[in-house]
Amino acid sequence: MIDLRSDTVTLPTPEMRRAMAEAEVGDDVFREDPTVSRLQERAAELLGFEAALFVPSGTMGNQIAVRLHTRPGQEVITEARAHIYNWEMASMAAFSGCLARPVAAPRGILTWDLIEPALSPPVYYRARTGLVALENTHNMAGGTVMSADETQAVIRGARRRGLPVHLDGARIFNAATALGESAASLAAGCDSVMFCLSKGLAAPVGSLLLGSRGFIEEAWGVRKMFGGGMRQVGFLAAAGLVALNTMPSRLAEDHDNAQRLARGLADLSGCRVEPDSVRTNIVMLDLEHRSSLPVLEELRAAGVLAVSTGPRQLRFVTHKDVARRDVDLALEAARRVFT
Image 1 (cartoon, one colour):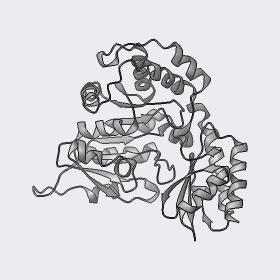
Image 2 (cartoon, one colour; image 1 turned 135 degrees about the vertical axis):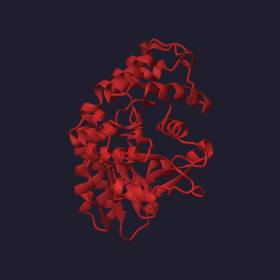
Image 3 (tube, one colour; image 1 turned 120 degrees about the vertical axis):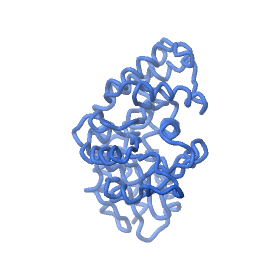
Image 4 (cartoon, one colour; image 1 turned 180 degrees about the vertical axis):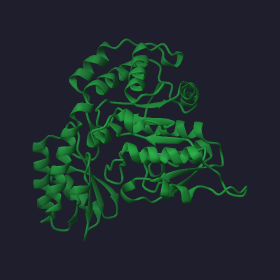
């Protein structure tokens, strides 16, 4: 079975497994796990922040940031297809008492000229805007990337309005690879950033939340409140360290495979794919005449796994456990399904 559902299905490398078996651990709630401390220090160093906090998931990292940046009754500006709005179980409402203010953006890239009209006016009877949340790469827009210049323009506008900016950088290393920039340059100036270890970097579990020392000090308490105190979690942090040090350099291979997949799918009857829009490891396929769920079942029967992201849309994600040969086999299966 060729699994193209997500890069979250990646399995840890042999080096990660060895590191996990040999990890030095302690009670991280007491801040006594040395491997977790090394991971947090390494993440902060790589992205140019003062401090970082290891959390179980990207969702928890995003929601800790929302909780710390906002007050109950405020709004959070997000792109209309953003993960923080669509795929995190309305957590900003449940945990922080905030409402998302979704803004549709071409390619999923929020620019200041789109954000500014959505900000609350200075009147007492409207909910105040409390936070601007960006996403890079943008998952549901097809892995699109936001350049450092685009991010900086949003940050400058937000500063003028006294607003913090959080970056959901779950796949920020994919964005950095696609743009030929560093992850630090893409995150620079944001008040907080989250990135995942368990997607393209192939670690088994975990994400990092980054910010100033004071912000991360507060984040420790919110993580505990949300149930994220993980005790002897150095076993997982050890895999995360290997992921950070070894996996970003191979992400271009996933991007090449996604391009190959997109070009092949674009040739099939009844499919709409834009290969030129595929910048990273995500390929979106729009179905012209069929519903997505029956097509998914036919693909599964042919040995390929994907996911439905809409009534007539499928998503395919390449990753380290999908080789070029697997892409070619997946395309052969897709041709049988669509012929």
